[in-house]
Image (cartoon, rainbow, N blue to C red; front, top):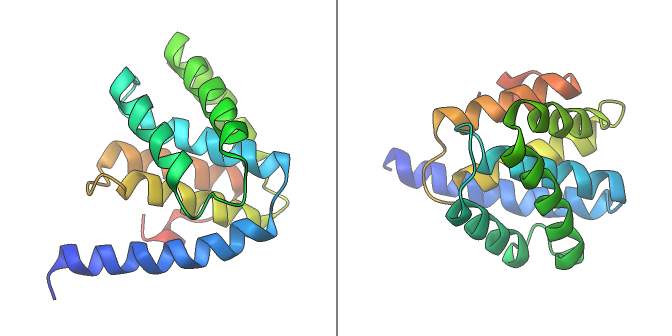
Length: 151
């Protein structure tokens, strides 16, 4: 089986498992952390352009994993963190990572947010090095070894 097929199968399995996990953590902190993660992935290369923002917002609205939340609530949080990253990437990144870090005492919820980031990063078929770095930083913020996610 080709590497790409293996990756697609793994993301599909992760998506199914993540949806189950996300359903367990249906609360405002989790919603904010998952959208901070999405914004970090969209801006992983140091900026977020309108097309990345639009595609990520579309993915958030239609993704089965996140369907346990109101799409409008998720988009509000995503737009908040995206705007912070757009206006000042470094400070926006600090705020997004701090939001994710609030889940440090809830490792299962933190793992689910990390999984959401990986799913978003791989949604376009290319989980690039910048996106992997953003996910590793989120892992570090919640005290989870990136190697748990093969990063």
